[in-house]
Amino acid sequence: MTKATIIDPARMGASFVVENEPELAVFSSLSYWPSSTRAELAAIFIALLTAPSHACITIHTDSLCAIQVLNKDNHTHTRHWLKTTNVSWISKITTVIKEKSLNVSYVKVKGHSDNLYNDLADALAKEGGEQKDLSIDNNSVYNNNHLTFFPFYFHIPIEQKLRKFMGSLFQAHICSEWTLLKSINKDIISNDIDWKATWTLLKNLTGF
Image (cartoon, helix red, strand yellow):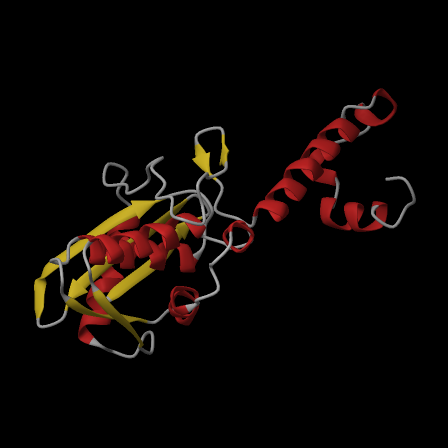
């Protein structure tokens, strides 16, 4: 049973519990790109990482998104990988399955259904998210036949769709340059501006 939780915008928790053997459990924390699906993929990865080679593994998770993305079979071209969210964790999972010759199946379970192991994994994920010295974050990226390079922003792997990330980065740069214009800089007080509404309006202006 795997479980994930978002503690705050900067930290998530991930855990797994072996059914019928609750003493066999692991939890960890991770940061960057807050997403329940990303944290769930990390939980699945650490579960598979501890599994013996050539084993048949059944992963129970309440994340349908994680199951769907892992069951997709269209990652056959670099373009598909770069257009996929959480590609680093997906690549790690597919790599460990291949290297350990695992037979893995995923089962969707209902969240918050008073399931003993689900509740235990949930508590461990929350505990893991609070830990700062038990982080699974690292700069290692598992490349594959279709992804021979991986984009980073400084030391952080880009887990968003690359085009979306670049768009957000350029938008932030344009916003920063605009706020530094002498003609308006002295009149701007960040707390007095609804930036979402402002940019929605400015996007409709030609040349902006």
